[in-house]
Amino acid sequence: MVEFGGWEMPVAYPLGTVKEHLACRSGCVMFDVSHLGTVRLESDNAFELLQAQFSNDLRKIEPGRAQYTHLLDDNDGSVIDDIIVWWVDKDRFDVMPNASNTDSVLEAIGGIDITKERAVIAIQGPESKVISEKVIPGSSTLGRFRVEQLDWEGVTITMAGTGYTGEDGIECAIEAQHAYKLWNRLLEAGAVPAGLGARDTLRLEAGLVLHGHELGPTITPQQAGLNWVIGWDKEFFSGKKALEAENRLGIARKLIGLKTNSRKPPRSGSKIFQYDDVSASNPIGEITSGNFSPVLGVGIAMGFISTKFLGVDTLRVMEREVPLECTVVDLPFVAKNSVGK
Image (tube, rainbow, N blue to C red; front, side, top):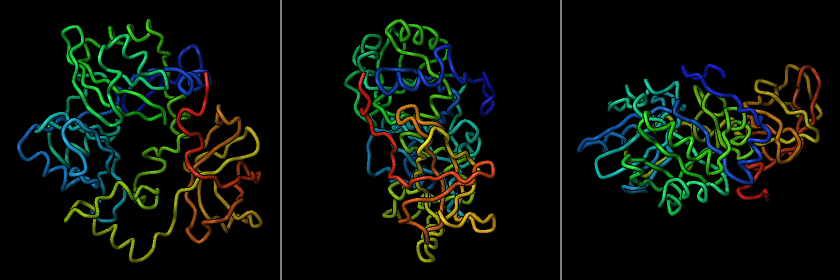
């Protein structure tokens, strides 16, 4: 157990991170992600308020859908937080920020912080719908990025077809007092408990960004390759002018994927160099996330490099003063449903 964003969180359960990871790729795991924030807006002008603050365009979806979006700094367009919005019904939005950024989102949009009132269990993996249906009848028909409310033994569960593993899955929000019962039912049905360690290696294999690493101060959505999160057709959103200025000047750096030919991964903070020039004074970028890939059996990483070097196939990362050869690869590293039972 470790401190994480003000919460006490499990790094791993007795099975261990690697086995939890592989169970998600081939079967079904469940994460307690109650540390994620929930800010609820219920008002006639909630739609307009979120449209003005967040980068994505809510006109692309409708009630009963979820959307990934960003809250941007109005001065430089960098990502204050990346967020999932659950549009539950006409005038109700449950906005899900990262654990440490709930206060910033509250300040930007108002609403009510209901984080402590509910728990969130993420059921993930190719068998997730099979397991969930055994426990929550009717949940298996929930589509990707769809939002529904189901009655479960007299308790309302709000569910979204979302996740952070690259696999199919459902995230279930339930009143905190009933979460223990739901967790145990899922455990009995065959879901494998998984902790922060597996959550991080899974999202990295799936090429999914993490705030504080691939997103954060000075990092814009365009640098992170997330142009699709920008609602350019909206007349206004916080940070839009800054992103337009970045387009005019040219994007200075871009996020890339790197793979080693050994089990050793590049680590966050390590400098990236041209293959034939590892002079400490000439780095071309920096690793933001790196780890061992349980599926590929080699080290993988994401990092930013100067756009002048995009298209280069092989680079080196200086890892503890030893140059580590890396191949530039497309993201994701591992595709959904690529691992059999």
